[in-house]
Amino acid sequence: MYKLLLVEDEEDVREGLVEEIDWESLGFQVVDTAENGMEATELFEKHIPDVVVTDIQMPFMDGLQLAGWIREHYRATKIIILTGYDEFEYAQKAIKLQIDEFLLKPFSSQDLVEVVLKVKRQMDDEAAEKENIHVLMEHYRKSIPVLRELFLSQLVSRSMPSEEIREKSGSYGVNMDGQGFMASVLRIDYVHHYAVVQEEAEEGGASVSLKHSEDRYLQLFAVLNIADEICRRVSGFHVFIHLEDCVLLAALEEKDAALAAQQTLAVLDEIRINVYKYLNLTMTIGAGTVCPYPSEIHQSYRKAVEALDYRLILGNDRVIWIGDVETERNESLVFDEFKEQSLIRCMKVGTAEELEELIGKMFGGIPIPQLSVQDCQVYLMEILACIMKVAKEFAVELEELFGEGAHPFAEVYKYNNLQEVQQWMGAICLKLMNSIAQGRQSGYNQLVENAKEYIRHHFRESDISIHRVCQHLHISTGYFSSIFKKEVKMTFVNYLLHIRMETAKEMLRSTDLKTFEIAEAVGFTDPNYFSFCFRKKFGISPKSYRSGSGGAVND
Image (tube, rainbow, N blue to C red):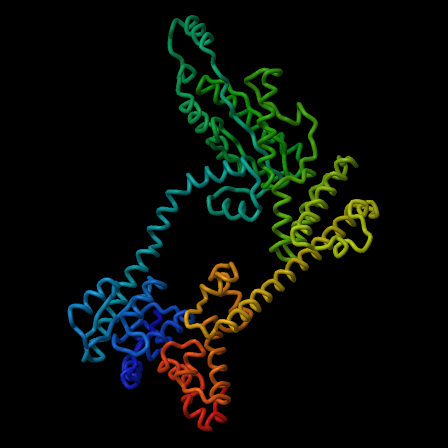
């Protein structure tokens, strides 16, 4: 159903068009009517119509002026002009304004129906073009392999939010359901030129497989094909090219990290053996740590790359697991940039439920049996420092959060276990979150009060506008409009009109100024439009209100 606004200064014509045509059966809803272009502009913010049917000759703002305003502010709205003027100059102006359709007076209801349906077909075609699901889905389907590769590369390159991982893995058909996650890097061993020459001499100069190919990427894709064929037989295994290596990601159902790693190492060794069997290429594979969350896969990948460095000591053509060559550090205790930014964002704009979940994750992954006191202390101090940094940014006093005379870093030692520390830190973060929210609301209130004060001081000026108010407040019009409407329960235009009309009523009661003088005093350049707005708001003319009928005005 398309929304239609009808603009016509003759009441009988306006009402006739609304009543004589079955708009709903045509696919339209007449959301409102206006008597002139000026009134129509005030209704736009409320309705944002799809189609405007407007007469040309109207008081205060004619149809072409209205069309120009619409093209400046609402370019997508279709415009149908009703006019008795068929002179060339009007046609010229209309062409410049990109009027969609004309209808010359006199016209019948059927004439208008045909024109409106013509515009509707145009809008239907535009909507179909934008929303052609088949075309979009086909394009998306073709893009999925590329998007999947990009997603997998992002997983090993940086930390990603869990929600983003769930959404993208589901969209791209990547199984990320598991109890543990592990990354491995498959790197083809470099073949030195002298070794190739020697081998060719031993084999009588015969060319052997891909080993002699100078195209390393061709070798890489050949390895990818073999690895992919093997991974397809194992649930949760994905292989792709990242930089100049093949990378294997494993989402493992086995909860025990050691057993999960052994399952992955077996698959990696099978890939290594088959690459040599079919391609006559040797490769060294670095296997990373098993991490509990997919958002930490980039840490496992980093460890896999580090494992490859041991090739110099242990030799090539093998699988090297970082767990065999290095003592595993408690990666979950690292308060990295991602954890810090997640906590900051949550305290600024999150909900209490999101905060509770985040704090739970930050403490839930700590491996208690392997925990050192020093690592634990550093981890907790970093979280506290993050909280205090946010408090400083929003000018929240530390005593408000931690209590009078409290020393945050010393407070940690008053608790008996990590669970108590988690509850304490969660309560502090929640208190800070609420303080920030209250400050933001106070900021909204102050912003609106400042705007009201500016309007009260300048409403008498005819050129006052929302853009001018926003320039004074140094904010954008979109941001201001949403806040003002939410706090005041009316739009800026309606509030300005309310102030002007209430002032005019007071002046009509308490002064002898003429109507046109009062109109000018409250910011109207056209006294006739002032009278129109006054009657529209109060149901009575300014003259009748002054003469004693004002008591019957419905405020």
